[in-house]
Amino acid sequence: MRRFGRWLLLLVLAAGLSAGARVVSAQSPANAQNSKDSKAKNDNPKSDKQLYKELASPYKKWLDEDVAYIISDDERKLFLKLQTNEEREQYIEAFWQRRNPDPDSPDNSYKEEHYRRIAYANEHFSAGIQGWRTDRGRMYIMWGPPTSKETHTQGESYERPLDQGGGDTKTYAYEVWNYNYVEGLGQNVDLEFVDPSGTGEFHLTTDPSEKDAFLNTPLGLTLAEERGDRSKADRFMNSDGSHIAASETGGQPRYLNEFERLELYAKAFTPPPIKNKDLEALVSSRIVRDQLKFSYQSDFLRLTDDTAMVPITIQVPNQALTYQSRDGVHRATVNLFARVSTLTGRVVQTFEQDIQSDVPDTLLTQSLKGSSITQKSLPLKTGLYRLDIVLKDSASGNVGVVNARLAVPPFEEEKLTASTLILADQMEPVATREIGLGQFVIGSTKVRPKLDKSFKANQPVGIFLQAYGLKVDEASHKNNANVEIEILQGDKSVFNTKQTSAEMDQTGEQMTIAKVLPAGALQPGKYKLQVKVTDALTNQTLLRCGTGPCSTDFNVIPADTPAQASAPGVSAPPR
Image (cartoon, rainbow, N blue to C red; front, side, top):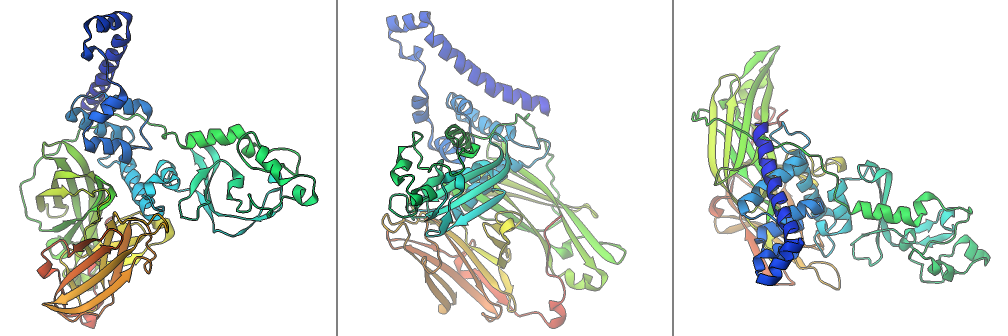
């Protein structure tokens, strides 16, 4: 397997070396003379700019959006010199595998973390532009969450350190991110972001005085300026372009050194270092038995215009499992293997987990009416894939198999689009340290899908949707959107709520809609759910009514009796 991986990597590198050899040859005196004499265009190598123009749109977006911050110059040049889409697909696969911290694992934690960071940046740093395009988004994608963070709002009082002249002033909104250690940047790294425009777009600065809101006014003097020893105009005479005042301590600390600040700024925008890894080929046997029934659901949330985060949720009825008793506890374990591949058979993603259900003796009978659920989120580019899922009961050996079509939709730029509409039986905010992490977590919300879309009357109904491509007003730097959620029983509207994006405090080009209907809000019966989003600035409207037929969106069934309510329903995620 490793031999094949090395061979494939060498093949890609060889293609680059071959292309490089053609460049050298074309620049040699002999070839230059031949080119001059023959006027043959094919003797002149194409520039990187020309090669980029000839790339198909998906590969341009991969370079400019998916990996813009982490691809090295050499990798980019090599990619541009590839001749066919098959070579490019192999190169992309090799690109991610080179960064995989555990090449023996079917998962690529680096790739998954990278796309999680993009999703987090879009949700938290958008300000008139997508969050991943901002400085905070870029630093978060490249270097991850800081060890600690200071957040300051506009108008706060600020006492300068003595090495910056001391004295009190007022500040623009700013943040200081501290990293204990970052490979390539060093130890105890501070990155400061300032929002002088008040629009919510913070940019990385090398000038500690840029957050001073009184810099260009007679206010906010340093200690020396208050004494009359110095003029405020002196701050604008610095040769390094900053407006730092002279130190009150007589010396300049290292962090204020012009070259130290510029070096840190340059390194911060340099792609992270790469760890070369061998490629691994994965061989799996086809299992044809189908004795273990289960359900699954794929949802789609935008990461970039042509890349989506695809949570794949798998649920197994407990009555289909084989429980083994030990020390008063019944345990069932199911081994899960799943694979996403292209229609030509190239493996894109694989993952495997154990789904485990532990039930005490007294609750076994009721537990068999419930189910066990797990989820894996995969970043996938727009396109058509094949999804293979295999479950095996470790006790009985029973196997369940699904082979399905997986179509990842595009999210067109400057067009109002939306994620899958998810109906959830559990939806709640997560702790700050868990944002974007773990099963069922989308951004800052835990959203556990209800695959059968059947809710008990004493069970809350969660509604989750993300809208993308909202226009942001250039003057206010805010969107102007309206959201209407309506539930109908037959032709009768039984629930209707409307909110504006301002009321939801959702001001960017992306908006998250998370609504929970309390238990008992709906009587038993069949219902139809519709979510309508309208962008008032572009007059665009979209309607979402679930992943299934809108006429049978979801059901509400009678509530459990007190005895039934004490029994487990959907079991916890796997180990």
